[in-house]
Structures are given as C-alpha cells and as structure tokens.
Length: 604
Image (cartoon, rainbow, N blue to C red; front, top):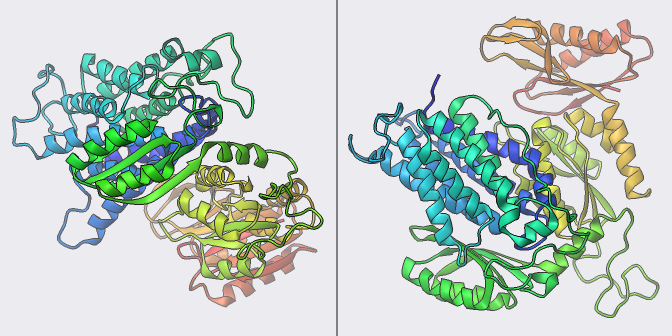
C-alpha cells in the first residue's frame, strides 16, 4: 500500500537511518580518505542523525504531553525538528553537509504543508499518484530532494565532484525522473544515489588512488535507503553497497592519507601539510554577517561548510589558526559549542589507542609520566585510575550497586535511552586511560560503539563488551580486575557476560502475537534472551516457570533484580522455589528499582 511522507514516517526514517548508520559506521569510517583521512565520517554521520532523531522524538513527546494539542506533530513540525536536531548536533564535514541537506528538504516539505490547496505542487508530474497531498506527496518529495542538493552545494565554499554533493544531486535527478507515488520517488532517489556513489572513484583522484567510494556519499545512500523504507514500508531490494571502487591501488596505510586535494583544491590536510585544525561551532548571526564570515574563513583555510539559516548556523572549517576562525565567528555573532580538533594529534591518539599495549605519551620535556624521575602528574589528573568501567543501568538500586563496585554509572530512564554523547561524557568522567563500556541493552550497541569512537579520538582506549542485559553487566563487573592487562581483563569480562543467560518479566500493553502464542493486555510475559517464552497471569508464578526452563539447561547461580514497587515476598517465594527444586543452585537478590520491568533474572 502506498505511503506518504508524514510525521510518523519522519520518525521512522530517523530510527531506520540511525540503525543503518550504526551497522555501517565502521565500514564508512574505514573508507574515509577525503578531504582528510581521519576515519570518522561514519561516526560523525551517526552522531548527526542521532541528534536529529532525538529532536523528532522530543517533538512527539511534546505533543503527547501538552493538553489541547494534536497527539502527534504535523509533517512541518517533524521535518523542521529533524533538520534543527541535525544542525545543532552536526559533526565533521559530512555531518554539516547532511544537516544542510535535511534543511533543504524541510524548507520545501514544511512550506508545502502550510500552502493553501493548489499551491506548492507545481512540478511536471501533476498526474502522479500521491500529488494530491501537500507536503508529503510525490511532487513535494521530488522538489524537497532538489532543494536539498541545491542548498548543500551552496553551503560548501568550493564544491568538489565525486563527493556526497554529487550523490545528493544524482538522487534529486533520479527522483525528478520517477513516476508514481512517494514510495517510488524515494526508491528512485536511493537507486540514483547508489549508482552515483559507485562512480565517485572515477571523479576524484583521492578515491581512485585508495580504491574506495566516497565515505560521505556512502552515508547519504544509507540515509536515503532508510527514507525509502520509511515511506514504502519495505527495505530497498538492492544488495550491500560496494565500498571498494575496483581500482588497483590498495587503501592507505595506517597513519597515512590517501587524499591528494582538499575541498578548495589545495594540498592535503593536517598531517599531510594542509590545515592543522578542524574548527566547528554553532553561530547565532544575521545572514549578512554570515556572508562576510564565509569570505573571511575561506581566506583562512579550506573545507568550509556553513549550514543553517534563520539566525542559527553550523560553521565547519579546516584552518591553521583556530583562534582566528573563532574570532571571525565572534565578529559575526555569538559562537558557542566550539569544538577544535588537531588532526595530527587526533590521528596519533587513534593509532596509539589501537595498539595492544601502549605507554603514556611523553611530556614536553621528552619524559614519559611513567618513567623513573618523571614529574608528578599535573593538578586534577593525579586521581586518574588506570582503568575504569562505565555501565548503563535502568534503576537507582542497580546504579548504587554498580557505583559501590567502582563503576561510572549512566542511568537509563524509561523511553529515554542515553545518547552517544552522554556515554562519551561518562567515559570522560571516569578519568582513566583505559575504559570498559557495558551498554547492558541490545538496542544500545550502535550508540555505545559511536561513543567509544568519540573517546578513542580523544586518546582513551575503550573496549565495548556487548552486554544485552543488566545481569550480564553485573557478571562482567564482578570479574573486573584492574591489576591485569587490559586485553586479559576484557576477555575475562566478556566471558563472564557471555556465560550469563538472562530473562525479564514485563506486563503486556496490548494484544499481540508472540513466539509463545497470543498475549492479551495485562498478561505477564516472560522473555528469555529477548524472546517471549512464557505467558502467565501473575509475577511469581510466571517467574517460576521461566526459572525452571532456564535451569533445565544447568546453572549454579541465580540473580534476581527486583523492579520498583515489587514486594519482598516475591523474592522469598522465588528463592524457596529454586532451593527446593534445583539442587546446589545459589540465589542472590538485588533491589534494582528499575521502572516498567518488575523482575530481571540472570543464570550463571
């Protein structure tokens, strides 16, 4: 059944794009050679879309909570929220360009939705199915993609073909040629973008020499694939993107760059003789002041991208004089969220963090802080632990338990999973050169990976153990030993987590088909390793059935984590059930206080 692009589709688009970029992030990072081979394009795009998704979710939450308003936002509100979220959270060159693309789409779709009947649909496809709908119809989507490409080209000071810009323009061209409903237009844009991506090595020498397609273009193909799926309800039929361009040259060696020209035609960047710093900031300024700012920044460096409008801008540039770039922003308006990255330092830190065993870098005197006779650490750094654990947990009781064990804790709130930036900030709070990150939720695997990538770029060695439940995190934390080597500790913690089977009990919110049959609203569900295995009436009885099924495969220790407002006699009843029915199995009980999940079970 044909779909239109409405607010629900925008929310689905964000979720699908975030998941797809999470899966493709490492591959996109690996082929990032232009304009700077700093291996972060996939991570930057993920963080940009994550910010966009959070803004859309906030728009939905605001409508749901406000009395007297519609239960969900309009298309205009949703797409503007998505574009604004991308703008304020944009990372790197690719993220800033993606924010500008989304801004262009939002301009057209929001304008069309607000236009009187008969306005805003003046394309050449008046007879196409779906064009009767303003905003999210087929013709609106065609013009939105065209506007996106035009704004993106305009935002880049010196556009270069063979990049994400080329892919965006090809998507718009293909969309304009497409007949049919919005789903057909979105699918055509995706297919056109894929074809353009495969041609990028022939258009840009840096890509040809490395034998890869453009990383930013690959990310845009992923985002457009998510759009096609959100509008049609079906994933695009095309297979995986071919990231290697079939060129004879191999990819760049570690620590080297494969690019030959920067975005303005200059030579290299950072370690290769070009600008040493990446400067990014948000800017509140009038458009006339931004025009002057573009000229000044263009004279200072390269890879200049300015995205935004209506008084709020995201400025990205590569320069040697970072202070001058910030001063130019101060003269234009009010810059904030200023981020300055030294390419050489970041690259060295990433390479250093990837080594199996590394020593702290030397200070300005040439001595390492761990060498005999080295000076004391500077103030504020003497309390750094050699290794830390960062763990995500859903309840205050679990948070206190993990904190008592020495972990840095991120508390997950119902319906508000932590963002990558929040996890990265927790890694910084841990103040350790080596960090083990325990997400404790299968849905946080991509978020944790993106946070780890951020921390590695700052010189922290991070390992993510893919724990899927808080009880797996508890098992890993129990065997954590900072005295052994990092690799040995990670292996031991991973082994402990993997040896812990998990279950949780939850109340069904509505009638639904499950692997255990049909459940009704109010039924107690027992989920084992993420799948519904038991449907019951009460908490204790359902939990006993779940325990029996899990212990039938063996086990020596049962962990029970009680949720908020669960009476203590439930734990007593379950302890007695295990003691009487399963020989030589111990039980430990924690009051986790997690909302919404009355009981979490672990079997070791």
